[in-house]
Amino acid sequence: MKAVEIKPDIYWVGVIDWGARDFHGYVTPNGTTYNNYLIMDEQITLLDTVKYDFSDITIGNIKSVTDPSKIVNVIINHIETDHASSIDKIMELAPNATIYITERGKKGLDRHADTSRWKFRIVKTGDTLNIGRYNLLFIETPMLHWPDSMMTYVKEAKLLISQDAFGQHLATAARFDDEFIECASHAALEDSVVDYYANILMPFGQLIKAKIAELLKLGLEIDMIAPDHGIIWRKQPERVIQMYQDMVDGKASLRVAIIYDTMWHSTERMTVPVMQGIKDEGVDCTVIKLRATPGSVAVKELWKSRGCLIGTPTLNNTIFPSLAGFLTYLRGLRPKNRIMGAFGSYGWGGGAVKECYEEFKKMGLEAVEPGLQVVYKPSSEDGKLCYEFGRDFARKVKEFHKKFE
Image (cartoon, rainbow, N blue to C red; front, side, top):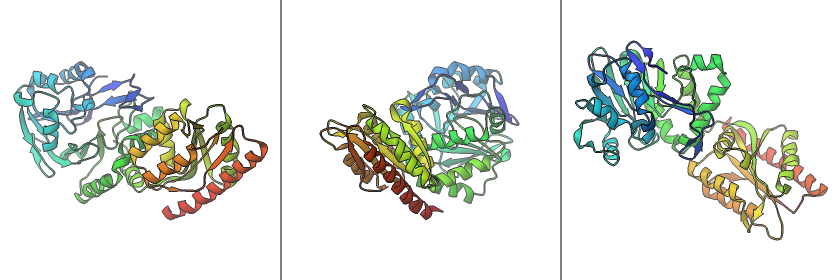
């Protein structure tokens, strides 16, 4: 796509990665975008670059607006490869530009590039830069989601360039929230926000909560939020801020996600009466077969649900490999305010269900014990046990959910 003016003399010059399906192990079925922004002022200023593979495209977009050699300032909000790995290409074209970056950002960038050739200014929260008609305010956001991270606020434009916060992995020709909603749906956009938060930002919930409070305390007037991934929020910037406030507080729907895998269908057969018991107790339920579904999607569904059941067969006296990998991934995300349980089939020796509960304890999650195990293929009597297990779990979920209403 060509450059898009998002505010007077402020342009999106990023790229759309239609084919991206893996983002450091997180599946991105809808592709992604790498957003960066160019401000045409007395001092022409570029905010962020893009993933190295797409450097020629962003340079082409910049050239459609101005000669890159005229860039005076380059602001690096985040040094992760998808945002900063084109810096060499940009600085070749604008060798006299000054790079504005946090202290940690500079140390990190030193590890990725030969920075001795470039001029730097280290900035911290509260520092400002006047580039003509526009004044820029820098706001450090460490661990949102890297130590170097910061945001840049363009005061006169009421524009927050928010780095990875408030983003989504969406490859779309729509640049703005209202455009996307018109061609897709509001629900699809919000689902992408939850997906991004659950798989990338979940571990940093309390830090995000404090940073949002800090932003609100600064009294910034924000009528547009421009993240480094996905669409730009020009119609409902306050909506995505509210969504983040809800997510960091652990808001979830009264429902259960059953995440399972199966070897010879015995554990799979257990999911049907378990699900029915949950539904008959008046709690919504979604069922996900893990090997048929990306783990990142399963994480999103868990995050949207107050309760989660793990269904795993026992293999070699331990958790089935796909579920073991999923629980390891989940532990790194450090979920909170969820209640867990486990069930599964085994042959001559169990172990998987017990290990699931050990994993829940490592994560500090509340769990409904004991889990449910059946030997080999579940019988009709086992089906009744599964049904009652589902009903009992749903009752516990309802009790747990009341704490957050």
